[in-house]
Image 1: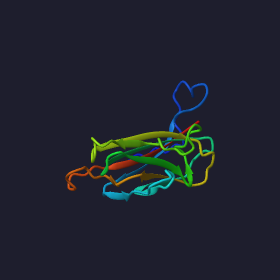
Image 2: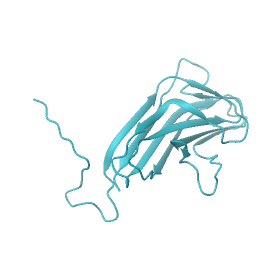
Image 3: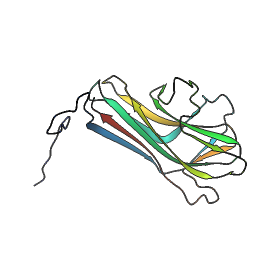
Image 4: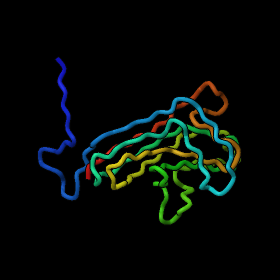
Length: 174
């Protein structure tokens, strides 16, 4: 006989700490197994391409919840002196933007100099978002390169040795 336990929230026996909850309400996960190529979009840096497979919809249980959004991407670029940038969006809002740099060039960036052409590197980023809604929202990852080609999930030198990329979204009670 199987048992099942369903709850909206788990609270420690000593109660919720002062200033908030912090309990995980729900988790969504997306994984990209295949490869993707992104050709240079030149400039400006706000031209971005969706990374297929790294998008997920989630409906918040509480309007006061925060969302911890984590991405990890395996990638490499083909041209030296290039910049490859990744961003995380909630619907059409770039949640990686900073007040100091509205262009968000540093959202999750790998730079390649002329000595490191075709160097494979992982890129990871964590963002804490406060959407303040109980309506369904979609988180997605986008990519940009200013020169050459950016390869997602493909290692340099051998197209048969590939990586995976992931997007994880956790609703955290406030």
